[in-house]
Image (cartoon, each protein chain N blue to C red):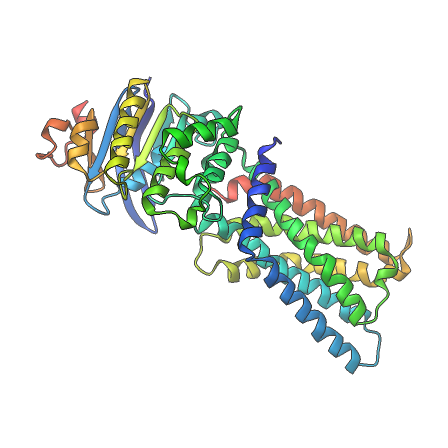
Length: 223
Length: 230
């Protein structure tokens, strides 16, 4: 891996900073979902933590598809995707750069949305900040590892965003479940027990998707 | 050794043959102009020669290398596509700097500044590409694709949108590249420029390639294949 990875990241961040196309949309979706969930939580009298964690991670996943789709469409619309692939750089450099940009976008969203969900639904995730960061990072990595490949695969199609959602959501169901349960069970975090099992499952998916994305990206993005 | 050698290449897109059993050869110091009717397959041929697409069948080599994904092959090729392939949210200078960095040039900032000067883009350096004219974008597209001084230069309709000064700059650049021993292939409809620049003119006709010299540009012989001529 060389420095060219960083120049692609820098270019994408500069483009996003000047256009503000992605983050406002992701943020709007996240805040809207947090508000709706808090409304449901007030209406129901039972334990909200499972619903809140599930909807929180589903929201993060859907918001991720916005940034994933944009990161590739910003290359495809001015037809730069072809020129980027023709530069003397390895496809894995492009994958790493796109993955980094998408991970940063989602991390920025998570920083706002997860505390919002925790506060509005009155759950206690925030009392374990370090463990919450670990779960958030693993979930983020798993979502973007598979999402970056899927976005590159679907970008040439007309309704690429719809296709991206259709392609990624089935693959991300185990990630959403594992991340939601790991978040919900933070109060019971221990070296043994269900929290550890869910966290291990989340880690396994993050590693598998990252490895698969790294290996397959080159072949899947060829014309 | 040929700069580019395409042997018996065919390409199929959405169930339709765009190019069939075509041979093509380009050597150093040569400037081949590809011409032909709209939709004849000129752009497809150039994309196959650039390595951005793989032929459905047949084989393309670049100085003997057959895999376009090889880093050393990509260093050899400068490809100006029909679309300008620039980032509209970046400035003219930033687009060049990005290209120089992607090509692994040792001092990318200096090369970008040099290229700005040489291509007459210095006055527009800090303008956002989205706000520049089509002519400036076309100049920038050519400068971006050739910033790494490739030995094979492939240009798809490069004179489109260029003003008289721009056309002169590009004509001079192509001559300079030829003198430097580079292999050049241009897709163009402009027969005047073709006569001035081309060492060979290739016409794509009926999904195949026929070879004609510049002198007989107005008298294309249809179905006269490279293989037959050789």
